[in-house]
Image (cartoon, rainbow, N blue to C red; front, top):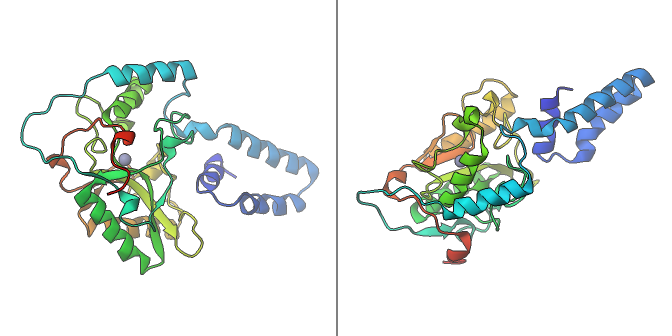
Length: 271
Ligand SMILES: [Zn+2]
């Protein structure tokens, strides 16, 4: 088994019994020496599972210093005409949307919680468009699984500072901000309405590899079909997929909104 295959299994939350079942069956048919070799491969794959992230894990003290510095930093000044922010908590518009906000836990590239709460906000027109996509997909047996939406600017600052220079193509420059900062970008995938499980895609979410490319030709035909189904449904409601990440979509009106730096706790809980 290639390490990436194991990582994909874990990442997609395939039940451990299922992931292990394959290997248990394999072990029965092999001699002890071969079994030991397979086990070693498995263990090394587990040990290497953090390597899909582009940055080394930071000590807690360094991360806390970064957070403190980020909260003191000032977003870029923007001139011109903008619409007023109208950030809506997306699940309040459609409770059948599922959440898996990795930045509220430790399963993200910083390996530490960045958001204090697992909540997803978008500017109202973008949120309503996501709801329409979710409804359209339900007829095909799928629902939307949301990873991330509006991101306060100070978090983009933290991501940038935590990332080595040669890996900064994976993160947004705080000097210009991210479309997530404007409340018009959403990271999402599909879940199966029957099983409730995340639908396998050619790469995991936030995987920094060529497999994350929206036109990546590898993976299984089913994975590519799921990725392309999501893209078609999102495009029909005004979202454009990112060039490097199949899970990231920008809403067509993102230029109309300013970079935001409001904390989740200061945004209304229900609307
Ligand atoms: Zn994104």
